[in-house]
Amino acid sequence: MNLSVYRIALKSIISKEIIRFTRIWVQTLVPPAITMSLYFVIFGNLIGSRIGEMGGYSYMEFIVPGLIMMSVITNSYSNVASSFFSCKFQRNIEELLVAPVPNYIIIAGFVGGGVARGLLVGLIVSLVSLFFVPLQLHNVLVIALTVFLTSVLFALGGLINAIYADTFDDISIIPTFVLTPLTYLGGVFYSLTLLGDFWQTLSKVNPIVYMVNAFRYGFLGISDVSLLTSYSMISTFIVGLYLWALYLIKTGYGLRS
Amino acid sequence: MYALEISGLQKTYSGGVKALKGFDLKVGKGDFFALLGPNGAGKSTSIGIITSLVNKTEGSVHIFGHDIDQALEQAKAQVGLVPQEFNFNQFETVLQIVVNQAGYYGVPRTVALQRAEKYLGQLDLWEKRNSRARELSGGMKRRLMIARALMHEPQLLILDEPTAGVDIELRRSMWQFLTQLNQQGITIILTTHYLEEAEMLCRNIGIIDKGELIEHTSMKQLLSKLNIETFIFDLPTGSHIDNLAGFTCRMVDDHTLEVDVAKSQGLNAVFQELDKQGITVLSMRNKANRLEELFVELVSEGRNRES
Image 1 (tube, rainbow over the protein chains, first blue to last red):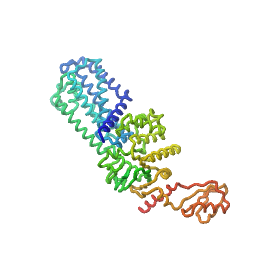
Image 2: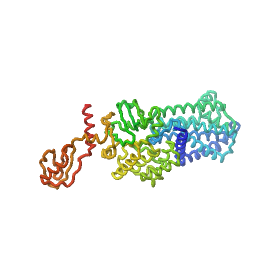
Image 3: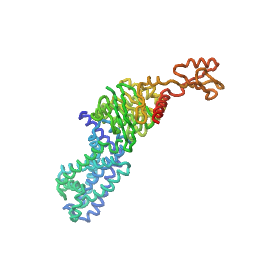
Image 4: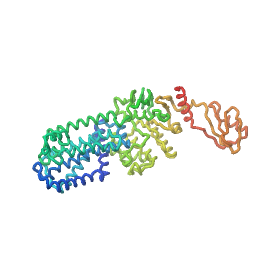
């Protein structure tokens, strides 16, 4: 098989995924804009004005990068989890399994779809935030790299969740009971320096802390952890999750009898 | 080189069920092959392994010489699958489904669009190209799966009960379409419960039962094994026959006669006897499809031997 065959296959999966989430834009693109607007109004304007500065910036400026990252994480994850599980449920995943598509292309295709939705939602939320606060750009490269790697990581997480899932409930358990608490405790709304030593150390086990801080550094130039540590953590998680997903698809877990 | 060569194929499911017990099969290039068997015999498992939807436990599968263990992608590229169950995204349009499928096989979009027009047109679905799959009737969904399987122009087309639940008119048009494909050189493997379909279309046949191949021969040879056929004669109401010299016969009701005819006897003798008794024959037909009789005979023979 030559590379152009793989390229066409990858393009087909990604475009199918993009068509899917744009077809149901009311379910996929509008809710994050509304939810984040509420966060901006309530936490940023109403409560934030009473909190004052954090890390040398207004509370609104401080939480904007974290809120953008939160929507990127949620959307990258849920796009792949729901799309891949739906493919399993309707059995149209068989369209891919019978075709000469290598497993890494299947993973890249679904992850590509999740990244596309994560980035589009991130852009929409960023534009919404402009109504509330002027956006600062300290380092565009750091912003782009962090948001891309984060959406890759959570798209892989969504894929693994979908492979293991047997029912639609199974694809909402991880986002509800794992992802949401980790995100809220990941330094979106506060600086880790506000926490005591024990809680600071414990927070550093949370991978989302590294993503939110690297992303915030890109906007504001401030971070509770170093960029090198952040990127090392994100990369390690990506490699680990990719190998896990590859193993599951190769062995046919939940896909082949 | 065979289109399909299976050797020692075994499949034991995780629950311990042995679906295939060392199964050998060869299907020649250009053949129209019927793979028959009762429900649960192992047909779908075999097809699943050939198309890599099921992991085999042991044995080898070669598709046009490509070993699925060594050259899986090359093997997959040769095969088009029409599964038993509808397995497309119900929310996608007909055109999206077939064009995406072509894309997975590396067919460029412009070529895929041309092929979509060709195959959807041939299967009377072009007008429905922008309809969502869930809006199609059952027969249209079956035809959509055939069109989808042809988008990468495979050399081996496997159809798992393609005409299940399809009305007779549509079934006949599908038979015609499949015959044309076979005439163009595409090897076809068909599983079906309509044995008339297999008899009409296929040149060679394999019968599988309880994970073993119990018959593997040409359709002609298999049918020649049939020694006795039962014919039904429709007679005028009130007809009565006690005996028909040389034949076993019975009146089913006052206008229906069943006669068992051995291959050596021929039908002329039956008509002569009926003529002698002054009986008028209004019409005549086979009691059952010939292949159906043989199929039942072979499967029950195998099961009797086993017990």
